[in-house]
Length: 315
Ligand code: NAD
Ligand code: UDP
Image 1: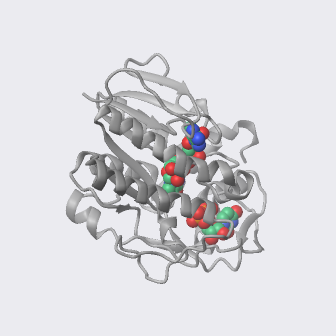
Image 2: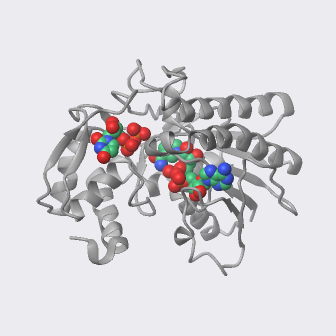
């Protein structure tokens, strides 16, 4: 049994991670400032043995009394709509927040786990993306606040590893979806499902030919734990390699929900990547990890979740 700090633990992925860690017997100190997270994601954890919640902005100095075996740093807004809404907070949590979380891990002699992203590959010119690809990022575009903060976070994490001998893991997370996503999060999966359930038009940006590869949250978090528990130091892609166009995703959501909503086309956001698909050979070979939940099953589960949280509004 380990005592682990999870930053961003009230968010979509962080809350699932806190649940899985407690289920396997670890103690969890969840730190979150609730800027994009919600206590509703962790309300069943309060009062559970081994769980502590601290409301704190990790871009400011972090201190946790007592022993700490691991620091899992997930704190960061992650949705493209937040890139325009709170760009400075994103840059700060990716840089200062990562530095503080690394400092905590170093002071405690703990393992450090960084939630990085496929966005470090930018609008990739290599397809699918292996970890060895250095990426194609516009540093000064609207997405740059997130992409560059995460690239800095990776650089800082590897510097702590090389310079201080810190034990580190870096996961490059590809588009993940599932329960605990915010209904107004702005990402394609949540937007389309909520729009379909509420009888609104599904807003496909551009002509919908851009691609993404969607991983169900249970698979993703299982990958986090496999990586955390391994001795694999360098960045590792965790994502589902099945690639879909965004138009295919919208059509699948309509089919699964049985909605009679229409698909409408809206302008493509600046620097929206044209294609994305992980090369997961490293995770398969070194961790024995592969995703198991297909997109239709995952969309059914997520639609069921949104039906519940939207309550009477759900169609
Ligand atoms: P989320 O917004 O649901 O969760 C992020 C959490 O971090 C929220 O609870 C938020 O309140 C908290 N947070 C943000 N800034 C903070 C700060 N300064 N101090 C303390 N807490 C702070 O997003 P998510 O999708 O769960 O993403 C979690 C992590 O995974 C992020 O680091 C994100 O970059 C990464 N990621 C997610 C995806 C995805 O598809 N969901 C893809 C790639 C990377
Ligand atoms: N997208 C869309 N309609 C929406 C939300 C997103 O067509 O209502 C598109 C978006 O432009 C992108 C893809 O879906 O091409 C995935 O967007 P998301 O925000 O989910 O993730 P990311 O762009 O970070 O991969």
